[in-house]
Length: 261
Image (cartoon, rainbow, N blue to C red; front, side, top):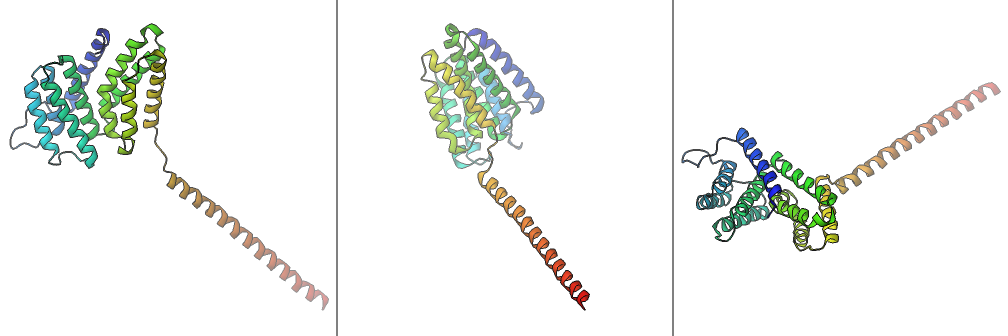
């Protein structure tokens, strides 16, 4: 778990996020018969119940969400939908655990909330805020002294575990195996040199994910069109110049014939 001073910072951030969400989303309430099903409303209720240590009620709410997901309440590809359901069911297991402490259960509920936010809206401001917090934490780790690096790296990985499902769900499924492999490897690092290398890899990964990838086929097609267009203009110009030259020479011959008469 995150050390105490970092937990205080995260708690403040969590409170700010919930307060901001409460201003933009209708007041959290249990779904009532006859009312439209608001998926994100139910998702945030899960976090509130977990934070209040009402784990059983939160688990029941998660089961209702699974049923809603299975009846097309979230527009995703089949593979992404399976992942969302898997994370939801995994969250239920964590809440039912008698071994895990309250802080870990809250972290799991928060990871679920961020994932659902990202699934509903890939450009979610909330997810962006947490991702920025993670990036700042990585930067702190890179600037830390050697003796404090293990603690900083542990904080980064705790935060990354929370944000990771939200990052993964917004990316193309073709990248998933690479992201999963990297995530597993990061959790197995022990020495300081590998920690520094891993922090740099994470920053580079986030940069690559945030950088729009140009469509190579479109670029090739545009380049080919440019070549044909420029080439066409050159050919037309040469033909026109040749024609004008031909007309000029023909006119000169006519004038010469007249002068010879």
